[in-house]
Amino acid sequence: MGLFSRLFSNKKTETPEVKERTVLTIQVGDIITFDLVDYEVVGKITYRDGSYEWYSYQLLEGTNIKWLSAEMDDELELGIYETIKLPQDSFPKQIEYEGTIYHKDEEGEAYVTGEGRSKNINGRTTRYAEYISEDEETYLSLESWGSEVEVSYGYDIEAYEIKIIAGSK
Image (cartoon, rainbow, N blue to C red; front, top):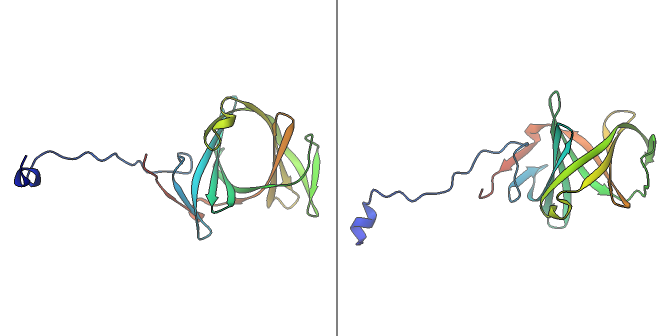
């Protein structure tokens, strides 16, 4: 095929179509901008408790890791969480953290699907509990992974506070 035939060819090179992302369709490899910082989505966990489903996205910027939680309850609920060191071996009715009392709001068990850096938990089940502060501004999230209970501290955000840049898929 000569130069002119390549230039004027009717053949179209196919580029993969990148689908528009929402907070409920974020994929590993996407970029999330939050609070003027760009984070790469390096992990995704899908939780299923009966017919209810929600997502946690592991966001990485340098060595800074945050988790974006997204769920569609009666309305879209978004939160930003960071793992904290708060030793727990159970799910008590209340927890004190940095002078604030948190009361258990809900508790259950969920089947998880993990992708990216979270693929090592794929197919497992976790017990979880959500705690809310008395002023209803901040949260503690507890997840039991075998003998370890992981604790995260978080707060609500609005959808307009983040920007999603789709990766290659």
